[in-house]
Image (cartoon, rainbow, N blue to C red; front, side, top):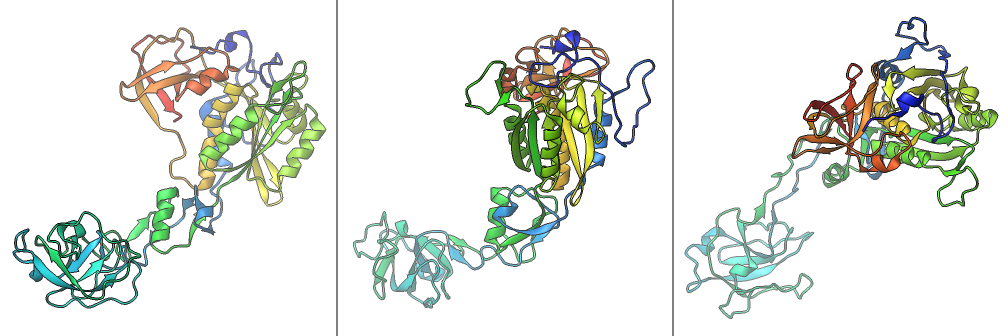
Length: 463
């Protein structure tokens, strides 16, 4: 239930290897809002680190995108409809377009017999005029012809068979058009029956989507339905994800001695895409500082944000610190898991590119992403809400130990119906099985070292 690694040593840089001691904050030219701790290396709070990350990122400049390219993006201005929806009065049923007066008193025994003067199909360009005693066969979505006031479903009629029996089906739309003929209608109708009025869904000039709207399938469908073929949005940030460690091999590859599959780059790339980014996975980079510098410098051309995992503590092979120690700041955070973090802004071709260096343990990396990277991505998108929803819930079982002075984030299962939260899985920050079961993070604040069952707690919802 608790991450006991805090009691045995600091968070690791790579998967579950490297025993680490303390590491030093190089500063890298970044402002330091915290006072140094007496007699020890200063540690940052979660909130201080997040504030500095968010201060370094800004919404991306807007541009016009085609609708499907804009999926997942956020609008930068109110979108207004230039057309009505529906654009004309049309039928909501297959049936007959009629005048109301011609059906007064119609019953099964005394039907109204009307002359059929034509067919009206969806997309019809020319329409028959409906006069007294006349009607037109009409299809769903077809425009209401002049003179008609209502539509009667085909089930209210004999479908023009002259049988006196109500029809259950209608001749297919591709059938020979009816030029003349008669149809018996067995009940009356009110004006507007089964008619979709022009503009009853959307009026001309009506606001469709306010600025700050995230575009999903339904929003894109609405824009298309109202004639918009492109929309002004902030583009999705381009996020480059790479993991470090000579022990990492691609999933599916045969494992040699001491090797493990690279899971972090896949999980973090998926998380970045889920947050709305265009994410590019670079994959495992060996523990070679010069090679890492070359790869990161190459990625600066296409990246709006760079995310690494592993190599941020003080082990002999902590390659990210070795390669970038003079360019970004490395620090300890008062949190568990995820104590070692790196952050800075690298010089790119189009200005500064923020970089977040996360710890290498899979759970530490993922929780760090949720707390720091995801809000940064959403801010770059221009989202109005950049943080996960937090709830208050009742704890179902005790949390026996939480380190004093650290904010702990426990994997947990939240039950919305019961209003409860339950810690899941073991304590190790390398245990992915528990993370896959969790839909929330149980937050234990810095002053709390234990929690009893039934305690009221805060949880961050992941799903």
